[in-house]
Image (cartoon, rainbow, N blue to C red; front, side, top):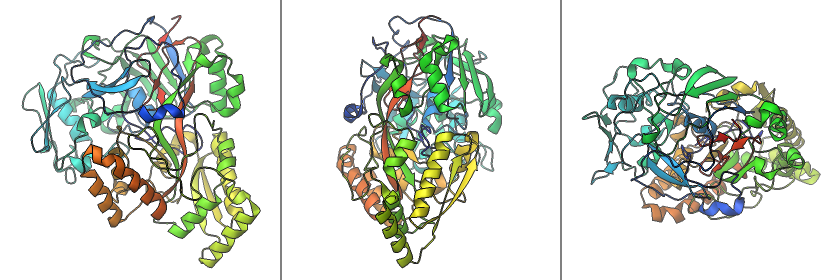
Length: 586
C-alpha cells in the first residue's frame, strides 16, 4: 500500500487497509521500536466477531478533533484510495467487507467481518468466493445498502483510466480483470466476475487462486456504492457513508470536515466508535509549525494531532512522552530510479554517490524510528531476513567524499555517460523537500551528473510523482511501500512484475520477463513455502536489477495534543488509529 509522505523522500506510498478501535485497556500511547517489528503482523483472523466494538476504558463523547497534516491526500474517492493516510481517514467514513480489529495492549491486528457476516467461503478449486452480507446496513441518508451496491463498487474499480491510483489486484486476479474496463464503457454493468444471487450474498469469481482475498476486501474499494449516486470523479465530494462519520465539506488539498453519521449502527460494527462529534482535517500545513503547535497544546491545539513522524529537530521540545504515539509499521522507504531511462551501471553509481547520512539529517529522520534499511521487505513482514549488499545499507557519505566523487566521475566517463542527467520533482512550499532536493543536487553534480529539478506545489506533488511516465527519471511513486497484508505477496508481484507499470505501482519501472517468471513461481507456492523464497527474490532484485535504493524502515512517532485520548498506533499502517480516539475533556 502506498505510504504517506512523512518526510521529503518524495510523495510516497501506502499500506494495507487495516486496523480499527479495539478492546484495549491502554488509553495512552503504544511504545515500541524496531525491536518489536518482527511479530507485528500475522495472518490472524476472527470470523465470529460481531458488533459493537468493545468500549475503550474511560472514553468520553463529544468535541471536535483537529488534524493538522503536513501531507495532503490526493483523493477521498474510495475506489482510488491507496495511501496509508487516506486509508486511515476513510475508515471513519467507509465500512468494507472485512476490516481489522486491534487487540490487546500490543494492538495486534485481527481480520474480522465488517459489512460481511463472515470472512468468505472459498470453492474447492479456489476460484469462487462467497460472502454473506449483513442486513439492515444504511447510508447516511437512511437508504438501505443493497447487494448490488457492493457489486457496482467492484465493477467501478476496473475503470482504471478514471481511478488510476487505487489498488489493482482485481485486474490481475479477478475473472476477466484484464478485459473488463468498468461500468462506464462499452461493457457497461455486465461483468462476469461478480454476482449477487440475492440481497444477502456477494460472489466474486477469480481467474486464478487468490487466497488473500479476505484481506484484500478490507480496502475502501470494497465499500458499497449505489450506482445512482455515482458522479465519477466528483463522487469524493459527497460520498455515501456507511461509517460513523459523513463528509460535510471537502476542499481538495486544503480541508476535509466530517460530522456524525446518524444512520451508522454500532451494533453491526465490530471495530469502530463514534466518540467525538466531528473531525476537521487541515492539509498542507508546515511540518515544524504544526508539530510544535500540537506539542504545545495551547487552547484548541490540545484537541489536535499530526500523523507524520516527529521531526528530529523537535525531540528536545517533547516534555511529555505520552504525547507521542509510538509503534511499528510494515514499511520500507526507497529512492526509486526509472530502469527504462537509467542504465544499470549508472544506477549503481547513483547508489555509490547517494549522501545517506547527510540526507537523513536534512530529512529530519530519527534513528530510533527510522533506522537505515538494507532490504526491500521490512522487519514487520513475516519471512523477513536481514542481509546487506555492499554499499546498500542506507548509510554513508556517498559523493560528499571527494575521493568517491572523483571515482564516480571517472567511471561515468568510461561508460560514456559523463554529465548523465538525473531529474526529479520536489515541493516548492515544503522546506524539507526543498532542502533535500538541494542536497542531492549538490552531491550528484559533484559526482559528475547533470541534475534537473522540477518544483511543484505540495498539494500537487502526489499527482506528479504518481505518473509512471512522468518526464523525470527518479522518485516516481511508489517511493516507499507498506504491506497491503502481512505477506510478501503484497510486495513483489505488485511492485516488480512488468505489468506493475501499467497498474501504476512499479518501483523503478522494471520490465523483465525472467524476473516475472521468478515472482510467479514463488506466488504459486503455499504461504509457508513463500516465507523463505521471498527473501531470495528481495536480494535478487537489489543485487541484479537495483530499481531503487533502500533508505529506511519507518516506525511511528506521531505527536498528539494533550487532550487526545486513546491515541494508539495502528501497526499495519504505521499511523495513529482514528476511530477509537476521544477527547479527555470534550
